Length: 503
Image (cartoon, rainbow, N blue to C red; front, side, top):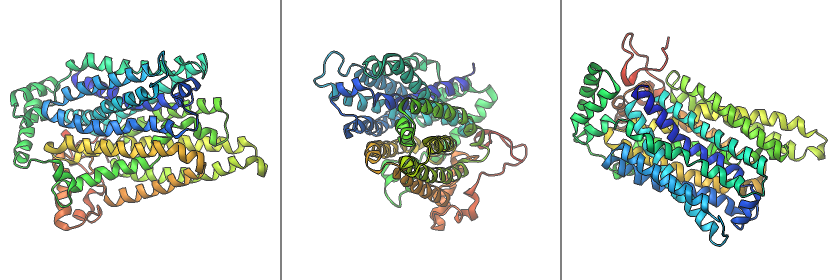
């Protein structure tokens, strides 16, 4: 197996950690022994707090891991995150094991610690992968398909042990937690087989090690050409060090890319799919299905989600990031608008004389379509763009900002979702219809197409936007960044190459 494939497999398995946690918590939240051990009622808002504090840990972990990965290397940064994730997972597993007093505190601590690790992974791994891959979109979309594999695997384990042991058995919720330990332990064992990124070595002025890293990935001539390209790029950037102030203060050099990054994550959270992933069974129940049927329908939704994510990595370098996001947001908005109608009919079916099945089945189909649309349009794109629009000197910080915003946004969504379910019921779908519409409009107006261009070419958009005094994509350079560039014949290689040839 070549090094490129090893990097993709490693990165994919690391990204699967996040998906596993979402699938793991969705049925743990309804386990009677878990609720009793934590001293909670099923409708307590603290259930949502335990889920959501994980995302606060992710936000802090992203900053720490980004700093550490810049100082010590991408690989050491990932290793630190994996160890932290493993520790947090163990704390969750032992929460209330043989005792009840303090169980909730240990569970909350475990959620935060695991969030620190997973947030760091989500910050550093996309940077690591993008710095070692030519087909960046394809590589990252494959990794996020594994994110859905993690979600599917966790929910499957949960469903099997819950049906085997019952919702009142403590091992029905502890078993899925400890099985997650396989991921960090396996990755810790394998990380030494992988190269450090040559971009990081060059950034540290360790050019001999950078060339050795390139030789491990490419043949000798290609490695030499890549080395010359990276050194030239570094020389151009070396006089322009970038800090967080440059990214977060209006008017500074990297403020515009940071706004694109921040709004990408805010809009992804507002699609509602953090809530759908964690509270899937409850949504199917709202549509009129029974508890057991809802759980199996959720499993089917995750399986469909995983399979259809294949379209994401087939399309992302062919169509581009921006069209997938715009079409996806409007498509999800329509689905949630329809679900609002169907949810209302489901809750009033008996009163108006409509059979439950007549509403529930169309509702399930629409939710399946919405989930697939989110996976293709929004799951990986918002993580990919920050790795493409910043210079090398700011790439890790840019990824960290992305994870921080993702963490805070998903903290809010997962904290509020159970409260909204209990009070707004199907009207929650209408809220998501509106937020998705906003996401589509904002993306169409302000998010440039970063696919098919090198890191350095994407910087040109922001330079031109500053000189032309507009952020509207259609007005910058006459709308050149509204879509992917059409490559010249016989020049499709390197970072600008599309995954599939365009006609």
